[in-house]
Image (cartoon, rainbow, N blue to C red):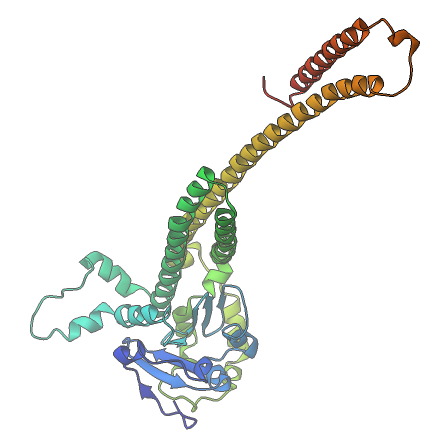
Length: 393
């Protein structure tokens, strides 16, 4: 879309091969209620004017900034930041950022398939042919009754849960063989490989944990879930919001000020019944269970890594004990030989001894006594080391 607000129709086949341009961070795709997409190239002020959100909310979707996964409910929009899925959902349309990204293209295709209502699709079957969709009638009818924003939200949640589950499966397929290889052969190459896999697992666990915490926070607060019912809020404010979605810049930026304070106060005092959020609660619980299962798989992998580290430490301790045993025996042998060296040193001196004359047997007795003492010392040192557990029995 140019500065004048003109809309360029989207080509799903061409989107897969289009490379990112220098201004790809400003590229958006707009989906309406029929699932038709239109490529837009607008600045942030046009987006803020379109969906009536603040700049701080739009800043969360900036790909140049690092923000954690977030689901924010605003007066007329849902701001969605789930990893690579950065979208703004209203009651009538979806704005998705960076549609040419390889991880976002499947989300684009899924939105085009699931956003149109079933009744709208059946209107095109005027020749009497049966509807050959991939869903049973009951499931399709139930999905058709869901509000537009919930269908879009479900596509985003399903995409991010599948993406994180796929990354977890890839990590498991690489980690378990590497850990088994490390237990069989401890080497610098295997240790470095496991270190990299553990770092990747830590980063992935943090990403999965943030998505899970965001869903859990929504499930714990009924007011936050009620803020996501955009269609119901739009129906309550229908006298004001009936201008439609076709005008890009015709609406005033202060359209919210047209609602009287009395009507706002009346809407704020409405007490939402517990069943009002039941549909969204069931939707969030389904994907919360899925992301929690992914987190449990990562936790199991972390425990397996910790067990492998403990096993390796035991092996290293065993090798260390063997080295201590060898060092102890060498030290004991050195001590024993030192007595023989002492005897040789005494009798090798060129000093005349009166008791050395006619006493040639003295040297033999000294050698015998020294050898016995050395053997005794060697046995005592070995017994002491075994008692302290320094060597094996």
